[in-house]
Amino acid sequence: MKKLYILPALCFLGFSAYAQNLINDGGTINIAAGATISLTSNFNNLNAGNVNNQGTLEVAGNFEAADASNQTGTGIYRFNGTNNPQMLTIGTGEISSIELDNPLGLELQSDVNGVNSLNFINGHIISGPNTLTMTTVNNAVLGASNNRFLVCGDNGLLKYNNVGTGDTAFFPIGYSVGNYNPAWLVNSGTEDNFSAQVFNNVLQNGLSGAPLADDYLVNRTWDIQEDVDGGSIPAITLQWNQSHQRANFTGASAGIVNYSDINSSWNLLQNLGNVTGNEPFTISRSYTQPQLNLGAFIIGQIGSPTVTPESVGETLTDANMSCSPNPAAGGNMIQVTAIALANKAISIKLYDLAGREVASDTKTASPKGSMPFTIPHLTPGMYLLNLSAGEGSYSTKVIVE
Image (cartoon, rainbow, N blue to C red; front, side, top):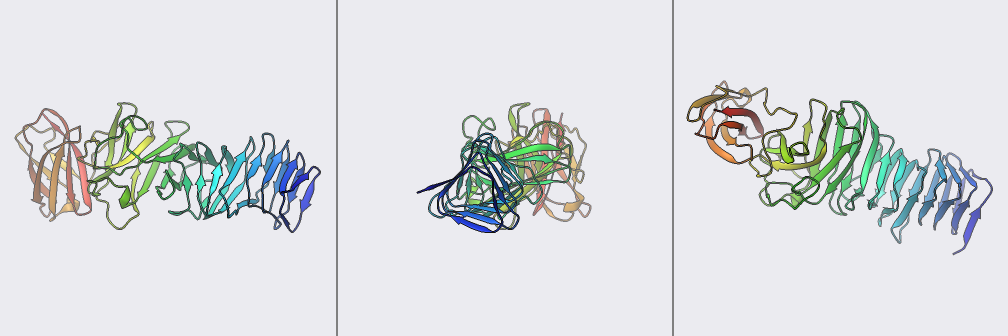
């Protein structure tokens, strides 16, 4: 294959097609708005070369930009090969807008920064150990689906810079081709940079250690990080399919669980009720105060050995549920009330701080949503009382004296 070298400045005003490898050796290529360069082979931007792209650069081969080279402008870089996966290498520069139309995918050979728009038409982006960084947040990623997303199984990351109050960062990620587990983050706190990846397992120490044997989990771990801890107030949504669930996970009394580096354990953030409907399933958790401890997130059921009912920096007490007296003495009866469950058949479960069920009962709530429950003779301490009926589920802390 011949190589075409560009040394002086060239300006493209219309459509140009090249069958050769195109090498910009320190020159400047100007692609005007509405113009397209179409390459059926490779492109190399070398020796401080500059591509000022206001139009479209189509590349069917590999794209390599060396250190000190630049890709300026807001134009589209369309990767539309058909015979092989394509390779993308960016040195110290950036690339504005990526459009993927290759069923065999695009493989990142370096970190890729400065992306304002990412459009999936066909194929996956394989990140390897690299990070793809978006500089635009809302509606910046288009076309993602269960067969078009960023594969980050080798510790790759999708990152958004400057996620401010009210912004929604969409992470179309999966640990491998065929396993799509996207996440969404809405920030209502201090502006920050957020990154995400997903792993095919749940580990003892969040992001390390031996796999957990707990079967009441979704077999995925989402690692969601912020650059500066402590200011964000995120709402997090996670998605999975039935095939990603472990054997005993039914979706009843499910919660998003975060690994706490503070006390080195998984902690229940909130009982979010029963997961219903058809796959793909989603579950969302909204924080109410700035967080110091993002990181590993999983989905589990209350009563799972992994899910402990004591949270870190959050309250499990539901404003729509109460019990009296509280504290309560073992062997005594308490009155439990959840007005939203009035006249319904209620499943009552009491858990210890290890997530073990220590008592249960079934009652029919009164027209005011109240019902009696006898506290068994237990070791004094804090417990979690859960009421559930259909899709309604409420939890509160109970202290046993």
